[in-house]
Image 1 (cartoon, rainbow, N blue to C red):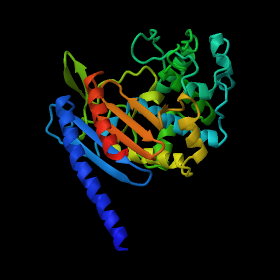
Image 2 (cartoon, rainbow, N blue to C red; image 1 turned 90 degrees about the horizontal axis):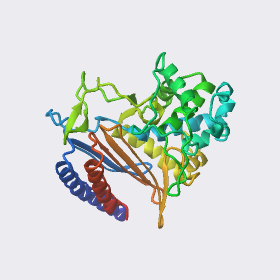
Image 3 (cartoon, rainbow, N blue to C red; image 1 turned 135 degrees about the vertical axis):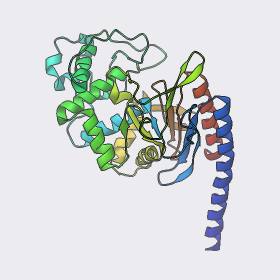
Length: 361
């Protein structure tokens, strides 16, 4: 009994020491790269080894960071959309091999021949050749009519009339935000509910993860402001600023706090360790490792003996990243409320390296 107590004390002391060191390191990164706020965590399937928030909600506000602050997670939304679709695959509403035009046969005639046999799996793993729509060099989008859902459907139908983009020798896939719109449209069709309704039912009502859509609300409550980079400096972005992501909400439009995101990641860690929870363990394995390079919502990476699921997300005002070490059943999460395309990712990489140095042994 005494030895068990001593081991627990040593682990607690070690974690406390790491936490103090990491917080100092995170503060130095925040200052060096002019990042207003950073939240980060190291977690296992059933515990939080380290978690902290440092900085301010905005460069123009005195409000200090808290662990309840919300961040727009950008393309880390893809893992949540793939997770949601996976549940309906388990329920038999869809199969990974379901063809897009089996769900939308009326779209086949007007679409490019190259898309004739694309499947749900192809869309979620970026193997369908759909135009990327990542905010640069995109085709000019027509002015669609109707409500948000009708416009998103019209966008998806139109995207299939565009020439496909083929992968080159450097990658087996072409990363596409629009591909996730098409996958979500398939789910909307077979369930009769919108992506927003399905996400709210699953993540808020079933799993109590308290997700939101678009920017975190910072006009009526104290919360994070995203920061864009303009004329060599960060500029705070109010939550009532229009968010233009070109009808690709299922790929990049969820906001949440790090404490709730941790719970989502912990479900994935547990599933990868062979435990059934909201999804079956076999489903988690396929989501993360079923397809080389990019599986379903996650980059599937092998580096030497390392086996990793990783993803980053930004809509040019926040930057978030998650790494899951599939061998050690350990995850590292970093949220920031600014993005400049260069310095912020560099600072985040340094902090990620520090976390892995302390815990990835």
